[in-house]
Amino acid sequence: MSSLKVITASAVLIMSSSAMADIRVADTQNGAWVTVTENGQPAANASVSVANVPQQRKMYKTDENGRVFIPLSLQSSRSVKYKATTEDGKQSSRFAFHSTNNK
Image 1 (cartoon, rainbow, N blue to C red):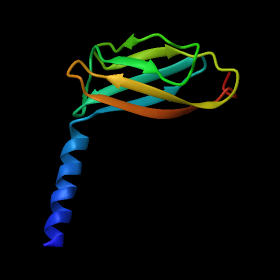
Image 2 (tube, rainbow, N blue to C red):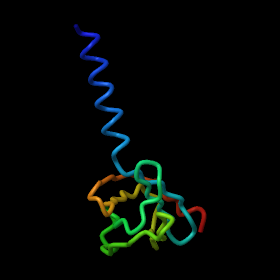
Image 3 (cartoon, rainbow, N blue to C red):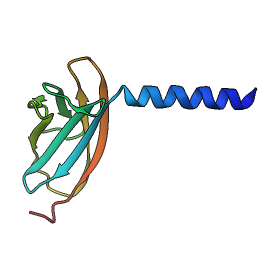
């Protein structure tokens, strides 16, 4: 009976994670390219924001390829939290490390 519970719980986790949006971040010299996908496909018009950088309060929208550039002017290397919401209302967040050494 316990193996049935493990299999059921695993199936639920796999199904729930595949229904979520996914965020990928590429650090650049002046900011970050953020790509949002939903079920493996680009999420056009997804809203993306930066949660833990006080001077960055703007909301950005992804293009038809699910990408958006977010300008960042950081004084020191740090981890930045990105939040994305797709048009279907699916949400995701991710931390990405940004280095000031590449500037």
